[in-house]
Length: 303
Length: 196
Image 1 (spheres, rainbow over the protein chains, first blue to last red):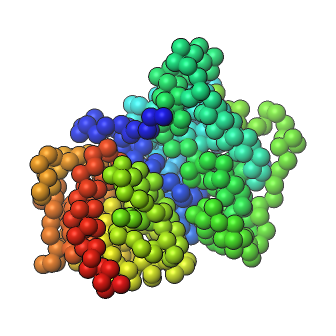
Image 2 (image 1 turned 120 degrees about the horizontal axis):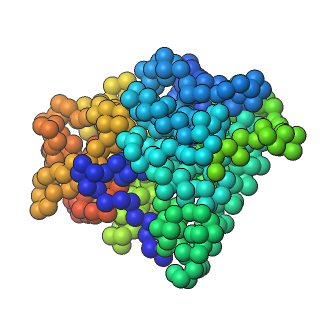
């Protein structure tokens, strides 16, 4: 099988290499959702590799309803001044002007996220036009490849954000990894039909069939609430985990944040995951997916 | 020969991939016992605050520093350079190589860049990939500057320690990895084994 090769450096024209390069630096870490500078500091002190700034954590968006938008600029600036780790921020699906504003501000990564209220029900942002890298959610391989086709430099599972229930993240990660395994088994003459069936860009389908991997890092998000959840996602093939409501909706965010970092680093060692799981206080309350009305599921936003 | 790659977080698997291409065995270093019988270690790119917190949560950090002081050849890329140099603030850096390192001093991600570098002893230019890169300043007398960008050092060496503010692991050019193996790991190996 061919090696997954990073784009070749071409001084002046190396946007995609630099974008994927930052994603590579975040591997093996934990990215934490924060809504203000104080939480960002707690996240950094706990060992987060980056923070994700948003207006409200998904659990509150779910509870309070209303339109969820990009975070306030004042709060973002404060977070960027406070921490030395990369600052990511969410935009609404398709809202390329929110993206332009965040690029102008200098955030390090943009999450075009189903957690916020979509701004465009047909189109996602054309991400190749930006210097700032993007991460996008997916529930299956064809969705991941469409986002990569538009220029995403990192893919994450959608899971079901704000539930504290890891089941959807597991479903999406297993779905993506099992579909990736099938492509290298296909003959070359089957790949065009497969790309058509998937509705995914042919060139990227061919690339995955040759390397057996996504061309960009593959992270996990959506419902991770405990150190064991984080280690589970790493064992299923995630290269880093995003933790949203799971930290700041728990009874002891400092300790839980540290514990999730510890478990993610040491996911291969059950004794260390056990250590990380001690004396944690209450996890965030969880939600049964079946009790969420179909129309309120965030994972169906975007396509 | 066995080369360790500190595997607490970051670009460790990319470094291991290149060392393996040179037909050299690699060890992912996650605990102190992984430090046994190494001929060199790479501290990869990643987030230095994260490295420090994870290393200090066990005795891996103190054992690694002890090995480096005893002469184990080491190469720090980006975050790894922050750990090895004199870095102010968070994290403070171990001060093992006599040069000041300023985190993210080349700017945020939108300021990241690729620049062709002239490296001492290399016949061809090397594409340096700088990502939220640290800036090196005020090298001490014992520090050899191997490459500069805009008049400031971006690759430097002192004794058993090598630092780069760029990421050779993000390219398929093996030259800097080869340099680390031949000029530090092979050459200094005997001395290190003697003192250890």
